[in-house]
Length: 133
Image (cartoon, rainbow, N blue to C red; front, side, top):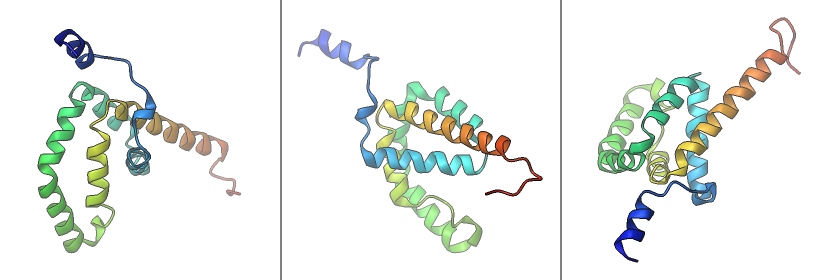
């Protein structure tokens, strides 16, 4: 592979969703569900899309920050009972591994929009004065 081929590969745009493993997809789905449970889809999509060019660099910052994040989450889980929903170290490692791939942003945004649309559809389909089935 000569330097021209390496240059073309470094700036390649084409990619497929199959590049994500099942573990990556599961971690990104969990993150999307966690965000949607707090009704924060729009800010999350805006944040993820704005940092799309720095996707790999952000994942490497996550690798560097991993010991501190794991220590902080363990400390918070022990001290404050309300923070038991904080993602654990296994999920954090899975997210860092997933964000190393270019397709992770598209997959996460797709999941966030699908979950938000499903919630909106469910909300519109069931007025407040009717009981759920």
